[in-house]
Structure formats: structure tokens, C-alpha cells
Image (cartoon, rainbow, N blue to C red; front, side, top):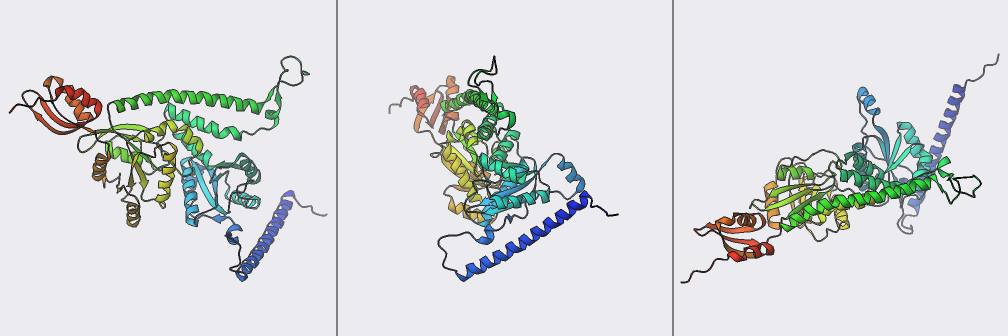
Length: 503
């Protein structure tokens, strides 16, 4: 009797043949690559313009050390129940290899913050992203093999992909594809606590999703409308379901913008009250996870949430603080920035970021222990320009000085005109920072010498709170003050100028 092959045996034979074909193709590609490299050496010096290295173009570059997969089996099994398993992919278009790997390492930190398990990370060397699949059709197939090999269920791209790129790349890799913008929006959605923060995140998400709505089947069919052949309640222009969805999203976005504008009013009233009382304001701005909230707690004892994660703070916190000389000012903790911060987020959080634009002084916090602190400084300054805070005085606060390389600290202190190294964790450099804030805050412009009756103690308190007292003496007639105050307070004190005693 002739034995017949089972389906599983046939599948195995097919897989072996495919593996052999793949191995043959790989050997052929290696041979061709060696010929190309040899040929390029023969005509060295005759290239027309800057060209990318073929060895870089020929393969996805593996980035080592990104995986966060756990070794303990039980812990891995537990985490797999709740974490997405992701592969990261980036396109290296400019800069050094280290720059591209730093960018992918930051993407890995973002993915972890969002609750994902990073399995692998690859970089494709190109002069610009592929307009169809971001990394090119051939490399997309290679990425599909990596996804299958690692068991990933999501691919995260280090850039903002167009709707077409998302669709085409998903069609090739056969798993969900997420870009950097969607990942950051997801983190913001998890961390937003206040009503305003949630509304701002929802608005940014709708702005992002609107052009990326995908329709198929019933969603592309005409809802109502047509030539009238369908009878009652079907006549009219009609619209597809996806058009209806887009219209509803636009209506909801308009409603969100009105709600955010109403919430903005309350914060503006408080800000005007501080301006009326001439209370100077200081804003803490900086890269995400640079230690802004830790610095706020160290300077004011505010007790704000501190986490070693990206975007732990979304809702601005304003606290009262006092300089060593006794001057009162406000200190505002703001949302962290990141490279390539999505435009939707900058727009949605513009009202929150106004704390930076309306301040008298910006404490620009940078992580001194980061591999590329200069890039952090540039990314934050780009967003600060977007919110119109270019004319505000800035002090660069190099945080985590206890963990930073002394050479990096020296380089940053030499490059920045107004800079100071501190450690919010240990307190190193905090007294010097407080003295620097005191020196840089705007000072009242009018100098007065007045004799205030003891019955007007509230006026003396205002001078202490809003001005700068140079001397104070208690006489039988009242409190003799010499101080610098703003014009409004000077007008209120003008009636108490002491009459000179005749000789």
C-alpha cells in the first residue's frame, strides 16, 4: 500500500523548501553586496555627491540593549497578560549612528511608559522615509520576519506616519502599527488627571485620528439619500457612514475647544490677580523626566508626584515660594517636552503652556546625566518659541549633577551663559540656585521713603509682600520705611511722605 503524506508533513516540506530558498537568496544577496563593495573601492574618489553606504542601505541595523523582556518565566507570563509586545523601527536620515540609537532608546522608554514590552529595535539607513511603507517594501518584509520571530503584536515607528504609510506597513507586517505621535498621545491619555488635562488630550487625539479614519464595507455605503428609489426617508444627498463619523468628530472638537477656553478663564483670573499684586512668577520648563517636579518639591516642599517615568506631570502646579531675602514669588511646574512633540499636543496644551510664556523667569531644567543633553535643550527651546516665550529670561538648571559626567557638566556650564548645576535629590547647588532666582527676578522700579501710621499696618505688609524693603525703623509717629515698590503701590504711599524737620 502506498503511504500518503500528511498535511503537517507537506507543510514541513514547504517550510524547509522556503527556508532553503531564503538561505539561497541571502547568500546571493551577500555575494552581490561584496561585488558592489569591491567595485566601490575600485572607483574610490569618483562618486558624484554624497551617497549612503550600501552596507547601511542593505540591511536593517539592530540596536542592542533595547529589550525589556524579563528572564523569570512566571514574571514574563504575568506581564504578557497585560503588556503589548512591540518591535521598534526607525529611519536614520541624518546625524550619527549614536544620534539615531539615542532616538530609538527614547522611543523604547516611551513604549515602556505606555505599558509595552520592548522585544527588539531596528534602524533603516535612508536619505528620507519611504512615502509608501516608511522603510521601503523590501525592509518591510524583513520587519515582518522579525515580528514573526519575536512574537510581537505591535510595531512602533520612530516618526509620524501618514495615513497611507500606516495602512501599507500594516498590510505587510500583519500586526498593528503605531507611530511616535500616537504613542505619546496614549501616554498623555493615561496620565491626564484634571478635567482640563483630559479635555486637552481628547482634543489632540481627535485631531490626530480625523485624517486617519479608515472605512470599509458598510462604513463606505451611502446612508440614506440617493435618487428616491428607496421610498420614504431615503431621499436627499445622503452621506457615507465614515463622512458622518468625521462630521461628528469635528463637532465634538469644536465643543472641546469651547470647554477648554472656559477652563482657561479661571486660570487667567488667578494670573491677573498675581499680576495686580505684582507677584513675580517663575516657570519650570524642560524635557520630560529631567526632574522638574523634584526641583519644585525641593524649592517649595510642594509634595508633587515624582516618578521616574516620562510625562508623569501633565497638569500645571503653581506653588508659593520665597527668596532668601524674603521676596514672594510663584513657581509653576509645567508639562515636559520631548523631541518631535506632536503639533496636535502643542496646540491642545497651548493654554497650559501659557504659564511659561507669561512668567518673569524660566528655569530650564535639563538632565545632566542624559547621553545628549544639548538635544534636550534644543527640543525644549523649539517648543518655548512656539508658545511665544522668546523674550523671557532663562536660567539653565543642569539637574542630576550627582549622577552626571563632570566633563559633560563642564561643557554645558561653558556653553550656556546663565547656567547652574544642581541635584534635586541631594540638595547640591540649591542655595546657589535660590540666590540666582532672587537676583534675576524683576525688581520694583520706584524708590520711596515713607512714614506709615501704625493704624495702617496692612500697607506696611503690602510693601513687604510686593516690594523690596531697604530699611525699616519704628518711630513714635509710625513705621519709617525706605523701599523699592511698583508704581501702583508708590501712588498709594505718596500721602505718607515724611515732612522734613526744619533746622
